[in-house]
Length: 281
Image 1: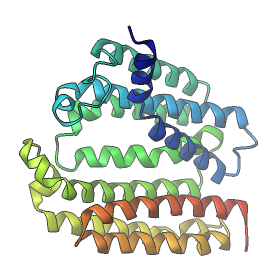
Image 2 (image 1 turned 90 degrees about the horizontal axis):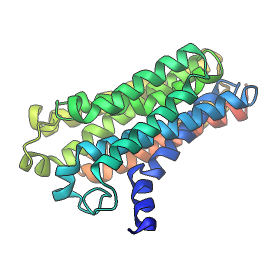
Image 3 (image 1 turned 90 degrees about the vertical axis):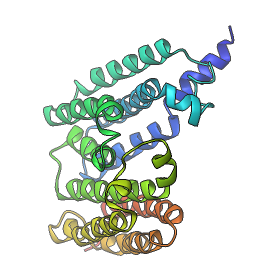
Image 4 (image 1 turned 30 degrees about the vertical axis):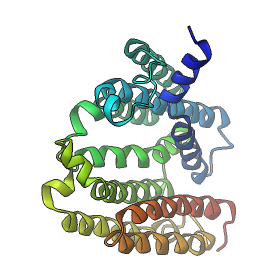
C-alpha cells in the first residue's frame, strides 16, 4: 500500500488551494465588519469551518463525479486509484462534521449560513449541476456567502459585508456563465444542458454583462452608507474597470474574459480591505 500516494490523494480531493482561498475570503468578511480582531476565536473558527466545508464539498463532488472523471479527468484521486470511492465519501463526511462542529460555536446567523452552504455543497452535483443556470447560481451564492459567513461569525453583517457578498455573487455568476460559453462544445458533446446551450451563447454573454453592470452600480453603497471611507472608492474603481473590461472581452474571447473576471473579483475584495484599513473621509 502506497501510504504517501494515498495521503496525497486525500489532500488532492480537497482542492486545498480553493479551500484555503475560501477561508481567506471568510476572514475578509469578518475583517470588513471591523470586528475580526475583537473576536479572534470566532473569526478563526469561521475560517477553519470554511476550509473544512469547502474541502468536504470538493471531496463529495469527486465521489459523485467519479465515472465522468474517469473519462474527462483521469488524474483525479479516485480515477487514478489513490483513493477509493468509499474512502472519498467517508473523508467528505469527516470534513463536513468538522465544519459543523466549528460552526456550532458561532452565532445563530452564522450557523444558519453554514448549514445552508453544506446542504448546497452536497446537493450541487446531483440536483443543480445539470440545470441551466441553477448550478451557476449555487456556485455564485457559495462564493459570495464566504464573506457573509465571516461577517456573521463576529458581528451583525453591515452594509459593507452585504455589498461584498452581492459583488462576489454577481461577478461569480457572470464568470460561471462565461465559463459555460467557453466550454459549450465539450458540454454539448457530453449531453449537458448548460445555460448557453439552452438560450444561446450571445444571450448568455449579455446576461453576464447585465450582472456585472448591476455589481458596478451597487459597489458605492458601503461609502454612501458610511460603512467604508474614501479609500474604498479609490481602490474599488480599478476593480470595476477590470470587471467591465472582462465582460466586454468575453464576447470575443470567453476564455480570456472569465480569467480577467476572476482578477477583477480579487481586486474588489482587496478594495474592501483597504477601505477598512485606511478609513479616509
